[in-house]
Length: 359
Image 1 (cartoon, rainbow, N blue to C red):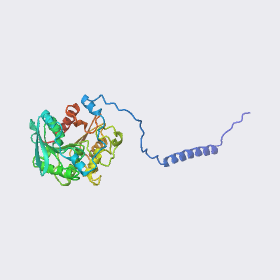
Image 2: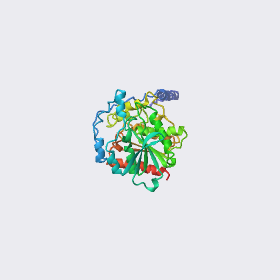
Image 3: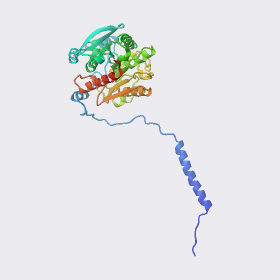
Image 4: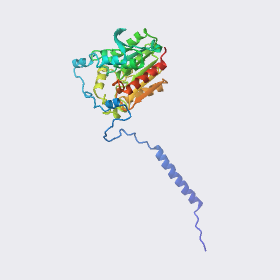
């Protein structure tokens, strides 16, 4: 005699419902739990960074150089600051002018000191074009003829006439003196050439001033340049950005966010709101900006500053190119006239300008 054991249907149904309920309750519990907060930091081991072999010997020497010796030292008195900000003649400028076959003429434009750099040979397509240059130096350094190095590179590699602004500097002339002077020169330049044939460019503080000059020009309803090229701009003075951490003590020029350059920028700011877009332009409205080419390097402390400006321009519908060079710290692309990367960087900017400027 065989005995068959059968589970009653009501028991099976109850078991199924009970299992389904467990699954539902489990899923509900999982879905209602708050996600864990994002981590605040990522620990990485100390390491030695090799100098990349993918760059020229000239650039390898720059990349492998020790950290800037005075990166964390700056003046403590007004008199000491005045000595640092005093205009200089620049090292090796006569030889640089001879190498690039350009001449430099001191001038005054709309009441502001400036230098006009002119190549010996200006091609026909550039004869009606004019570039306005705003120099770097953390708002304090590189006054006088020393301000013209980057302008000489641009005139030499690109064969443009370049008008370089020798803006006033702190401690005697804090914000907005440099911006006022840059805008004044732009107004003067509008009497020298058609805005459609002009561009504005500069590196570091000059890159930030390039962007702020466009903001002010737009605010004052002035014609805008046909293109701009802000190199590794000091576009955010609040020390915000990933590369302030990832390239901390890796950038051998600026070195760290709280160093000498930061002290100079704060001297220039003179207590002004560090999120006023006329000072750090990243906080401004960039809609309607002219096409822009931005330059930086993988070891640049201001890599994030540059990337964030690029993204903001793109989000505003502005044509913008981002050129990131292998291994370079802050503005390495303008520290050796013999480096192939220097020629490449300035020829890229020249090509961009030639594309967007009228003749």
